[in-house]
Image (cartoon, rainbow, N blue to C red; front, side):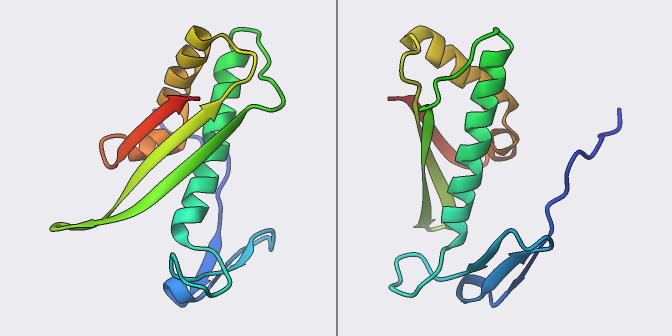
Length: 136
């Protein structure tokens, strides 16, 4: 079965962690800086955390919608992405803390588990980085 491409993101980045990144449509235009520096800008870990948390919340919404449920408008995902270093080099470690106010805990945990199976970021990272997902 071939894949149907539904969207392609295009960015142009110069200077690496001390450069800039811009999307082809101009909607994303950011200055890059090293994590923990006092320089203006963002870093790849923050961009990854923002992308994953947005995608994951959308996947939770899909799982809820499949049950004819709507997520509360104040549902949120707080993502923490660590840049880690050990003897084998740099890697990422992630935590997703999910808030689903008004959703029964058991149902919330089921929605999160389903979202982790359908979210493209979760699929891409599965088995590649340490991930901890919690309903808070």
